[in-house]
Image (tube, rainbow, N blue to C red):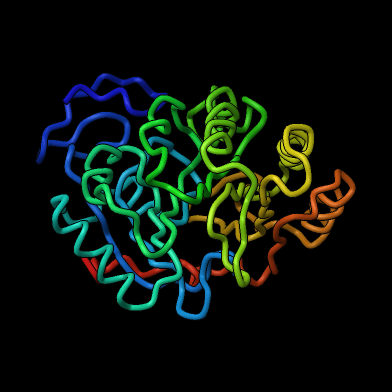
Length: 290
């Protein structure tokens, strides 16, 4: 397979067991953990947790990634489509509120095979970094009920510095519009998100201008009641971080971002306690459930 699934358009040859491309993964999925995860937004976790499958590899190279051991360092176990489907059903049987597919883009064709044609008893969540091609997302129509994209950047400078993707917003914005085209306005039942788009933004230390630009775009693009927005404070400095990325987000920074979000009229969504910026909120990637 010559891969053009994501905006990198690297044209890498990826075979069933031979990795390639920016994601540096083979054609068949590789995953590092399947679990009931309680630290997603409340509308995704319910009483038991979101049924998360953490896929290995990523088309971004975020220098602050909390999951770098799987996204950039290759930890994970190869899976067939049949085995992946078994994992999905195991999570459902454990009481998962949803099937939460984390960083799935580079495995899109095999994930679609694993999902099959019949609807699942819980929503399927596409939990991605937002650096997506609309044409790839169109293949998911009818299979994915909830889109959970990051909108990391609206400015090219930080996108280039931190994720080696200066064109991030050029792709993320139309990708989110395609997600919304598929799902329409978000729909909740008994406090759980059944369909729709929930946009996440991680506030980075010293990058308030970027955060304001992200919030501006969301507020200008969507009316109240159309999408949910989650402003996250959980940035955790990684080993070797330099400059402003070597420190956590301050109370003043997060208060300012939350106030700006409210002033722009975004009230459908979530803010986050600063206590979420702890390493213990990151799962132990021990291949459990895989």
